[in-house]
Image (cartoon, rainbow, N blue to C red; front, side, top):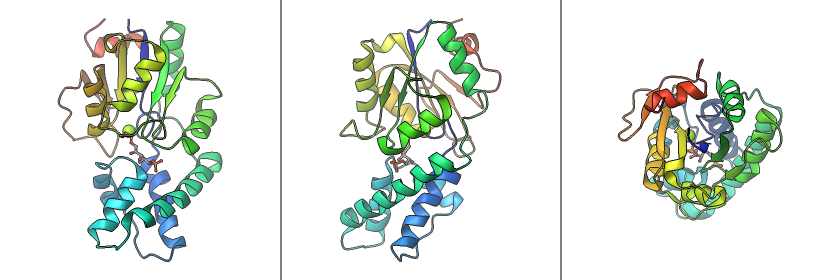
Length: 227
Ligand code: XBP
Ligand code: MG
């Protein structure tokens, strides 16, 4: 068995992007009097850029905005407030099967952590609401590292905080940048796809699964050939 399993948040523990982050970005654009609205399909393509602030900045830069970085900072602050509101009172749920898998891992004595490039301002209330306080032993957010996924920094920091070597850890991700980050840091990575990422390529994944349905600790191990 692995000593720890590290989970990504957006798209993995919860389906947050389409009905959570995306409308929060759009509310921020409207609030600032901007006409931009990110549709469901366009937003799916934009997820190749991790980090909401960078996503806005690149989008504005492509449109020739004179100060993409400055405006992105303000827009992202507003977006984060809207998203925190959704996290606290919106219809957010963990992905089906996640709660059971977490309970089974803990029962098997496996440590659990979270590694996301999202901001701490919403990550902590989200984890608290979905899983209760102190559900994870290590939580690394986009505020804790200089370079976001696909850089390995967030996973390396999590390994450091847990005092574990890469070989002792399994990662669960949903997206190509997340997989790339995990592999660059060393641990094996299982990809559990969602509506946005099903059909993408996942080179180097230990396994690619369509959902968490019925997945227990033993099934997770079996999926990576460690039964
Ligand atoms: C998630 C992200 C985040 C969210 C938005 O990637 O890239 O940027 O889309 O959150 P991953 P913020 O699931 O690989 O961690 O606006 O807080 O960045
Ligand atoms: Mg993700």
